[in-house]
Length: 382
Image (tube, rainbow, N blue to C red; front, side, top):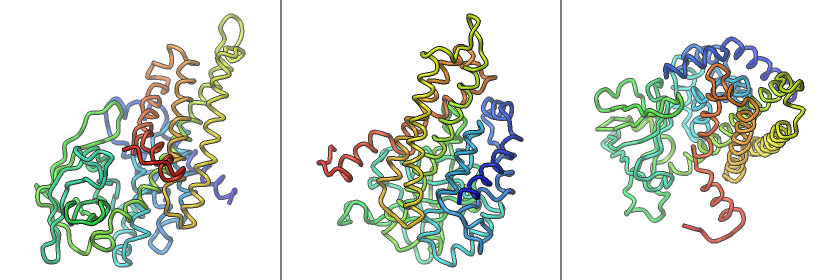
């Protein structure tokens, strides 16, 4: 397995070398979607790594997908431009029907179809997913969707969307997690019934508000049984936590790599700044945190690939990796000093990007709550 991972790292590193800091700086400044980069990853097969070979993919696991995303971010690139095509597979592969897989996966694997949108969050529900209001009403052989989603990334670059919506009102279900269903929405035929409003954020993330005004979805596009979507979507969320933890590990290593090299080569007062403990110790401290987070991520990925459905490992991996990356980001910014703020060096862009995963896709305080309640058995705090 080590040789496969080494091969993946080398291949990704070689591909990313074609998209240097100038490419990402220009993309960031223009708030442009990196189509060329995403197309290159697609053509190389990396975005289809989780899709089984029978549908045109690589047939690999979350562990291998983690290696790919980690290496992308370590190179200085930003896998957020396309990572959803990986983590949505947690829902589609585990709970989608054979007919759905044969209908969608070959096109996704080849790049003919893009599945980059994962629509769960709503403005009034926030992190309380059970209180979403977007409703899919069954009408014969179709569902009609009305409602609103927020912070839905890459919807303008997607052909398909994974959507979580209520199919039974909250006040009519026994458990809050009941009455939710998951759909594959074909955005190409939505027309005026779907409205997308971009959100201007501190990073180039293509986040949008999405308004559904009678969007029709064939019943054949519902994943699994009606009303059991919360359990299905958790497979996607657990995959998402592991893969985003991998991006944070990659970010952390990027900062450590850059800061270490700069500390070795930058001379002030006739000596390298890395000879000063005040410079080298924070970088070393951050590196150890990144390595520890990577170990937790590795275990979570192995468990997920073995069929584990609990969210403990994925959530802890995301928490630890995002904190480690942020520590490394600050160590790098301190090492570079004023040049860390200069766009040409790339540190400030990655600094902004690394900050996101402290609050998304789940706030770290909610991870602490999950561990306290579901792992340590303490009373629920809210």
